[in-house]
Amino acid sequence: MHSGAAESEYSAQNEFFEEPEYVYLDVNKSLDYLQKNVGKELAKPQVCSKTMRLAIVQKGPYYEFKTMVRSLLVKLSEDGYTNLPAGISHDFDYDDPQTWKNIALSSAGSCVELVADGYYSADWSDEKWEPEAQKLRERIVNSRDIDILLGMGVATGVKFADPALGIPVMIADSASPESAGVVGPGKFSTKANVHVQKYPKRIAMAIHNYHDILGFKNLGMIADRSEDIQNAQSFRVIMKTAKNLGINFHYCLGDIHDASNPRSQQEFIRCRDELIDRIDALFLPVFDGTSEKKFFNYIRPLVEKHIIVISESKIDEVRKGALISLVEESFEESGRFEADVMEQIVDGRRPETINQFYNVNLSFALNLKTAKMINWKPPFELLLSVVYLFDTIDFS
Image (cartoon, rainbow, N blue to C red; front, side, top):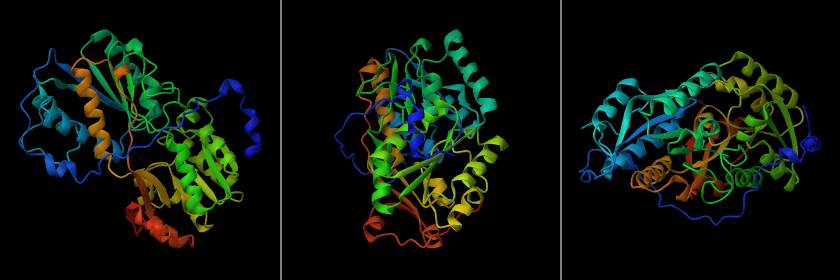
């Protein structure tokens, strides 16, 4: 275990990209876009110079990924760039093999075709992820039957935001693409043929918000030993932000990034127990080592000691007992943003010439049951900005 004083261990060679100041612009608030639009009369099919064959890759599933991809496919269909099967449910799961096959068949001949066997996922397993990613890279380079790749999350950005693949690569929902080394700073991509959705200064802003609301003085974080994973977890961004706010920052490093591996879960528990007497809040980043099954068991000792548990943008973890998370009000908007980028690429624009900044309404997910257990009463002003409010803990 280490305290903030150990920041000096990280020398200049490990400096992360500084993000410049950006102006935040609100997008229009989305209602239930999918429910409203699936099944409506769609635009006439676009006339495209060529069909682009789409594959999608993710290290593992998230509720947010499902919502975003559904919204992307619906907008592509609405705008005439692809065809969805007639009568498809508004809450379809694209990662269901039969659904993917049906969408792929329906999209044949349109501007954007889904490759019939073009959905790749490792179910969050490191053991599966490396060979799966390598298999996809080799397919892109050698078989040339994929024309555009959509990657979900920062792990896909690390693997596939590579001009050498020779096809447009879009990375969506990447929490910290600059600090993770996925792409350099700026409005436009620093890599040819790569486009990365960016939330300007999101992590630093989130820490400011959590501190203003919760008033903690000793913030803990469990980070991976790998510097690459630390970058994906915004480890140094959080460390620096805490220091600037006068927060004591305590951390523990462990081999935690593969939640499917029992060792990662054991490492989380070891670090939790090392930190528990020195912190009043714990920040859970991506790849935090916990398993979705029985999530509350991992954080129960923290809650019992009235320690605040903050989740990085995970509604599911709040549903299962984390106190709070700063999240998007509407993940449909993110999917529509990606659809717009894809349509521009199909129409001939290069990915690196398309604005990467995605300005979005952020709100909170909050668990009232957890708040009661730690004897914390949420201020009325916070409750007004909560979109996802839970009054029980999901132990499933």
